[in-house]
Image (cartoon, rainbow, N blue to C red; front, side, top):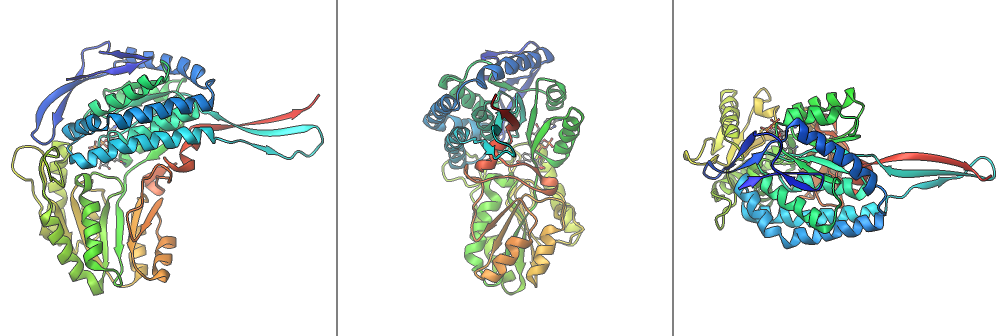
Length: 475
Ligand code: NAD
């Protein structure tokens, strides 16, 4: 298969010869190639987005919503095809991919409706005859960069948010996982999104971001990915005075107090940690368990991790697939080696499985010192660290020790404790006694080094709107 660019309403094989290889991470085999955009292609996308914005921003919010809802329906109808492409190129089990593909329809529907509710306001004036109005307007053409861990789930929020607000967008999708994104873009195309409003490119990420962010056409940058790349794109955006939304990495604490049920909570922890082989920015990483139930929790967690069925995500019953890249295998092995050398105990897993595909064992480390690299850097893979604490304030201090502030989880039946945890933890999202993140109607985003701005919720559309103030004296 050959994955192409979508520029100004046309599918294109690009103006150059550069191509990337698409691999199936379950066996390492090459299954296709992806077209890389050259400067001429990016310039065509910019010209398309400029004209597309002029047209689309004049389409009524009502009509934009109708078109988006049609795209949502098409997305749902094709969810199975999209999900198979996600699994083939990214590796996650098919049921997870299906949830992601079906969820895309919900995100599009949410933004379609929010576009119709992008209200302004009228401010009472100081003198008679004056009307003071605050009018939200679309910010302009958007450059969006999204990663491979949720090929559909990440990019759909950017596309739907921008389009619902009346913006055009150039989306740089992940080169590793292009096919499902192409299917998604076709849904928008067939739903009636006009030429130039939605453009899709692949290529060398640094070249594309450099070129697009510097262009005077682009008015807004939205990025999901790692902290170092986010910092780099933030610097580029600052130089060119572009507004940004940054969804960056995390190192989520998962705090379990001694009044919680260790068996039930460890089952939740195993499911959350090893979902998508741990390649989730909001995945729990530091399990902090209170002394009284530490041993019971570790025993149940290790048993749960050991029972997971690891294999090709397309096979029936598989619960954890391969890592998306060969390079993540070395990263995982390095984290484990370093943690053990620092004095941590390896309680499960710790190594690559076989030598075909990019599989790594569900891994559990306990009593890992703060000096270990994994206690400070985001592992972004199937490694859980379980450490103990005595007092709730200690757990809060450990949660807040790192510069990350994306997601956090806490478990307790005592309201005094959950209240302290909810207020004390520095994170953009805190989920208490369950997993409750990432629905279209709730804001998703981080603080501190985990970024700024929200996707989803009524906050999500604000990222694509500017404020125009109009003061009118009736003549
Ligand atoms: P990476 O830092 O090389 O890339 C992360 C993402 O940024 C990729 O999608 C990549 O294509 C893109 N990117 C890289 N350089 C870019 C540039 N100059 N301009 C525009 N885009 C650029 O890391 P990786 O090995 O692909 O992924 C592993 C790390 O990425 C993890 O440690 C994790 O922290 C982070 N990550 C985070 C998320 C998230 O949801 N927040 C998603 C994927 C990856």
